[in-house]
Structures are given as structure tokens and as C-alpha cells.
Length: 109
Image (cartoon, rainbow, N blue to C red):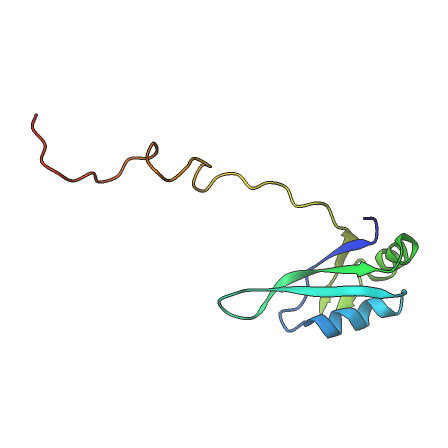
């Protein structure tokens, strides 16, 4: 999907419609989504735009990458697939074998 773009360094006031307007000058915008924080409801500072064709996506990259919008220089490039996350719980199942913790009960040594 050469027409799906990552857009970084967005201002925290940026919303989907204003992101779409920025990219509309370079062709058809199939979708524009600013990623929002669930708890605060404010922008996470990045989003994704899907252009109508790879040529329009390249035009948007050339026209907007590094361009200041709301006082911040945008980062625009072809979006990469999300990589599997590591860390956290460790991937094991939660039913038993795993990290320590308090087991309770009577112990006899």
C-alpha cells in the first residue's frame, strides 16, 4: 500500500478534517485519521492518510514533508506495517506458569 502515509509531528490541536484539508491539495484523500489518546482525548501527535493513488501519495510526501503546519514541521512518509510488540506480559498465558507473586496459604519449612 504505497498510498498509505504516516504523518508525524502534528500539533495537538490537529483533527481528522484539518489533516484531510492539508493533503487534499495533492489529490484524492481516501481517509485521514489523527490518532487520539483514549484518556485525555487529545491528539497523540501523529496520524495516517490514505491517498487515492501511489502517485498522489508521492506528491504529498514531496509537498508536505518538512513543511511547517501550526508551527511544527511535518514528517510525512510511506506508512510501514505495524510490527509485533514485545515486552509487557511476556506472551505466556495467564493461567499459571509465570512470574512470581504472592501465593498465600500456610507454609511449613
